[in-house]
Amino acid sequence: MFVAILIGAIVLLTGAAASVYFAATRTRLKELRRNLEKAAAHLDLLLKQRYDELPKLAGTCRGYMEDDAQPLRAVREARHAWARASTLDERMRMDAQLTTTLESLFAAAANYPDLGANSDFRQLHSRLRELGEKFAAEKITYNERVSDFNARLGQMPAKLLARLAGLAPCPQFGVVKTDTRT
Image (tube, rainbow, N blue to C red; front, side):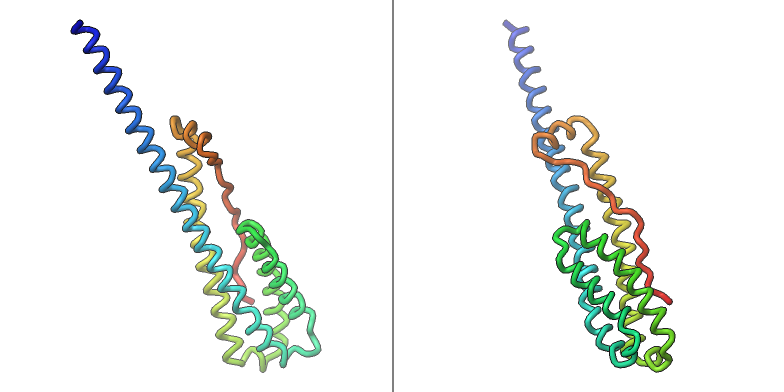
């Protein structure tokens, strides 16, 4: 009789410990996922801020670069493509294309000394560079959070819980050049 009670108590305690462990693992997965979503939201916000500056940049350049409209047209097209993107991954790919487009615009702008002397142009150029630097730093944070999340998903019992919850590893974003210096 005593042995049966002892075995029952051991089974009960083991079950309780396993339940607590699984609950703690589930909570940790949710926390990691929330941190990942927060970092993604920061990236998205920085991209939006960058794209919100483009009409101002185009407006400032338009009066000076009337005979060189291609770079301005390319910026406008890149902005429209970004607006049509529906996921962060698509917006980041569009942003990489925009970076190349902006480099072309700033290279063309170097041929217009009056534009280069324009305080609005210099301020917008500086703002876009600053946003690019913030974006690069935030992308590092995002990738670190992806690494933490994916590493946890690869461990047992998180692997089982993740499968039950429909959680899958997230891709990291590669290094995308965001510097818009000329």
